[in-house]
Figure 1: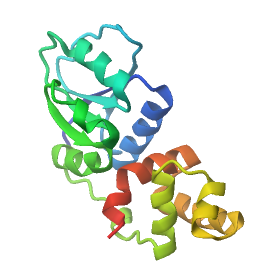
Figure 2: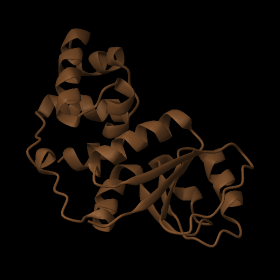
Figure 3: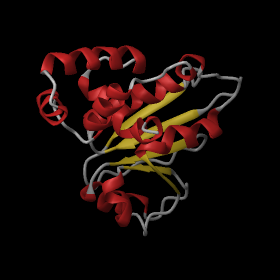
Figure 4: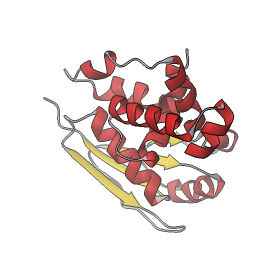
Length: 186
């Protein structure tokens, strides 16, 4: 089995932690994952063997990453939220939207690992609707209002989605939704 050294870098601690959890649930065979939380102007040391993933969720993250990567010899993989795609022109490296990144990363890290349980996962039409609304950042109450169903019904769908996505919190489910809902939508 190949040994990969991965560094996940980001400015938003909760999102980075949730991404790390989601990343490791997709790639349990990866042995070395380092997480670096940055603040504006924080220098990072180059990772000599391995791959760097930089997570960007908003405009200040992009500005900080641009400064961070000046003179940086590696070409990291930049994973970004769809809302900031237009701001990435000056950044060097591979760029993937958050909702597609695991599909691209699988090509890099696939070494006999099969996502057998996820292949069997299917979502009902209503679960897809709930998942899409969570991806838009809506709360349980807002989802219930938009779908004109009880918040208890939303909670039932939420529990089902937790089980199917292996999420343990609404934050993890929301991150999963924002990354995946475009793939499960169809």
